[in-house]
Each structure stands twice: as structure tokens, then as C-alpha cells.
Image (cartoon, helix red, strand yellow):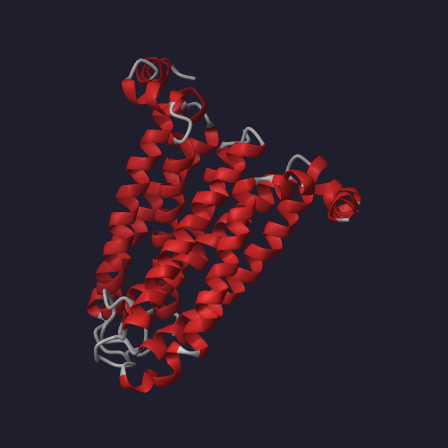
Length: 161
Length: 165
């Protein structure tokens, strides 16, 4: 581990949140439950939007309508993931911050956000239900799904490495 | 009787593989998480519609039939990966209270769905569109949401009452 990360780990271990996550027996499973439910919101919403972009599901609504329905779940879901993720890091800062899979997961998060912004923007312009989906939107949706799958995989394996 | 079945499962090639191979459990668990988050996220879209909280302009029957195929595929995947995880330590899981509650809740979700499809949906034609949703349908949606949230909670709890993960 590099020096700045070491000092961050040392500082986090002094915090009250760390104490709490370490001592309250129910804290870690409860926070993990919230984390998984937020994954469900983000992952399933993205799945529906990508599926709709590929004309596979939900064709009664235009992509713009689906975006209106699900964008908020993805956005707020990511915020809940961030907060619950930070709580888990506070609980065991050394195990997470020093883990290479955790770092890969955070890099993938940046990729996901970089895909999400243009995806949401382009979806918003597709207001007709019968409108064909441009290839760029289909590629953005499919890539987003692959990035989420990779992130979930990293997340689960952090606990074992 | 049941302990013989559990022991046989534990001693089977699958049980041994899941228990011994260090990569098997996390790999299967990863697929389990992907499957269960898909199930819950897609079901929640329909539940919120039944509660009248979202997607009011989408017909209930068309929305649920749009979500159903992927939900079933993910559910079967969750069931299969769950069975593999169970095979790694059958007796331990069988004796675990969180595990038993989780299975009971999944069965309850099934009963809730059956009641909704067989009874509540009989007169759906009058409330499939933008009309007001009957209490029984709202209750089915609300109950389903609560059940699946608890399934995740108990699922996570199993990991804290059986092994360090």
C-alpha cells in the first residue's frame, strides 16, 4: 500500500463510524443488504433500458418514457451504493482500500458513469415508441450492462482476496 | 432421514467440489447475486405499478408480461446457484434459522403471486389501465416488495451466521 492510502486507513480506523461498524453485530449485514437492494435498483433498471434499446422489452413506451421512469432509480441507487459502500470501507479500511479488485471496481465505476451520462441523454431524445434505436444507444446500453456485471463480480470477490 | 439426504448431498461430487474448490463458492455466489438482484429489481417495477406509485400509463398486464420472461430466467438461475451454494454445507444451511426464514419467505412470495394471478386478476380488465387499483392488488404489490427485501436481508444474514463471509 502507498503512504497516502496507509494514512487514510489509519485515520479511518480512528473514526466513530469504524468503531460502530466493528462493534454493532448487525451493522455490516444491514449495510450489505441496503447495498444489494441498491444494486437491484441500478442493475435491473439498466437491464430494462438496455433491453428496450434493443427492442426486446417494454415497447409500449418510448425509450424517453422508460428513461423518465428509471433514470432516478439509477441515480439515487448509485448514491445509496456510494454511501453504503463508504460505510463498509470505514468498517474495514485496510481490507478494502488496499485491495486491487476494489481499485478495479472504482475504475469501472468511472467507466460506468462515463457511459451512463451519454446513454441517458440520448434516451431522452427518443420520444416515439416506434422509433428505431440508433446503434450508438444500443452499444452504450450493452456496454453499461457489461460494466455493471464486472463491478458486481469485483465486489463479491473483494471479500475473498 | 433428512440428515441422510443432507449427508449424501454433502458427499456427492457436486457437494465436495463446492466445499473444496476455493474458487467455486465465490464464483457461484457472484452469479447468485446477479440473478437475485435482477429478480428483485424487475419484480419491484411491477410491484410499484400495482401500488399505483409508478408507470401508471403502462397497462399492468402488459408491464408484467414484459418483465416476466427475464424475471423467470433470473429466478431459475438464482435457484440453481442457490442449490449449489447449499450443497457446499448442506447440514449447516439446513440448521440455519436465517436460511429457513429465507426459504419460507420465497414460498410465501410464490403463494402471494398465485393468489394474485388466480383470484385478484380475474376482473383485471376494469383496472388494467389508468383506473383506480383495487386494494387486493395493491396489497399483493406491497407484500411482494416487503417479502423480497426480507429475502435479501435473510440471505445476507446467512453469511454472518455460518462462515466468516
